[in-house]
Image (cartoon, rainbow, N blue to C red):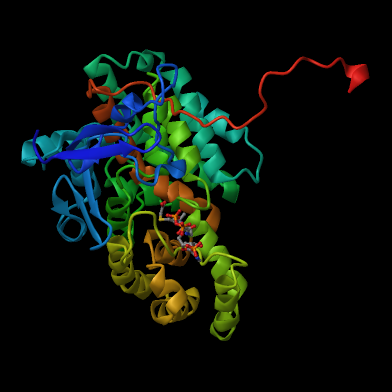
Length: 428
Ligand code: CMC
């Protein structure tokens, strides 16, 4: 017996079990042998919210939450944000290595020439109400895309899979931009394949009567960096949803609609929207102390703070804070920034936040930049979903290629009634 084991003594029976440890982890199924008698189902672990359960082995994204480290395929997020671009990072995340020039050119061409959507997708989106939330439109449209590409249900064929991956990465900016134009009551703008990925997105958002739309290079680069920062984040709520749905061998559109639905929630990708609503409600730096008292009295959360994994400054928040200045030089300052900086200043000194390791997360500053760029708050989760498409798809492929993966199906501890006889209506 090696030392890489865990010895468990069941005090109910006095029996001792030796469980193997690999990667600092025990296999939950090894607990099942721990029984009081032969009829016993066996021991399970209870872990609401999967706080301490690894559901997969992965080679895509590494996070050290204590040290504030984030790497895609081994490359530090800071280097990628400074030296790479979103499509290159997308290639890296999906295929595991940085592309050479030929591979990059081919990849970029394939993405930028799949940006148009079927006209019926446009019509479908136009049929939403004028005030439809753009994220709800995004989720529904991604789900509806499975009806346009029925071959996508063949998830075992690698070439078919790759076709959907390219389609999705290419078309999500178009769907996102259409949802924005719907909100604004403006005609939808078709993609311009001569522009970069983020430049084309800006064009579809802003273009009016210009023949050739020229994106502002600072905003184009800022958006591209924001896309890099949001591309993947290992087993978060949305990605775990992608994997759970993917594990039943659904098509990628259905799985991604579910993942985007998870992302929409205010505790996840909807947090940047919640941050802006919170800052607007605070309204002025002088109201910050009173607001913070409310947080400490547990009347509300400080949105954009705290993270399941990071117990240190989120490295993405640090990068976003840096690019904010460049954006504000173009757009003019966002008055919300002063309120955010004051909230952060207090939180980083206050015992309540310090003792709980609550630091700004990615959503704390991203919304302020998005707002300065002219996006309505309702667009924020959509802006998160565009780049996260890459992470979702990379994790989906990893799942499908992992022969140890099974359909996701957690257990429960049943605490309800025992068997009882049906009572007719008149006797209740
Ligand atoms: N404001 C005030 N208190 C907080 C906050 C917050 N934002 N976040 C956590 N806490 C407290 C929480 O009340 C608890 O205190 P105690 O131990 O005394 O009961 C302690 O800190 C630990 O929190 P938790 O809820 O057990 O932590 P969690 O890992 O389950 O939740 C979280 C993580 C991100 C859901 C949570 O921090 C939160 O709700 N934050 C606000 C929403 C937010 O900004 N979400 C974006 C996350 S990053 C981007 C993304 O995932 O998409």
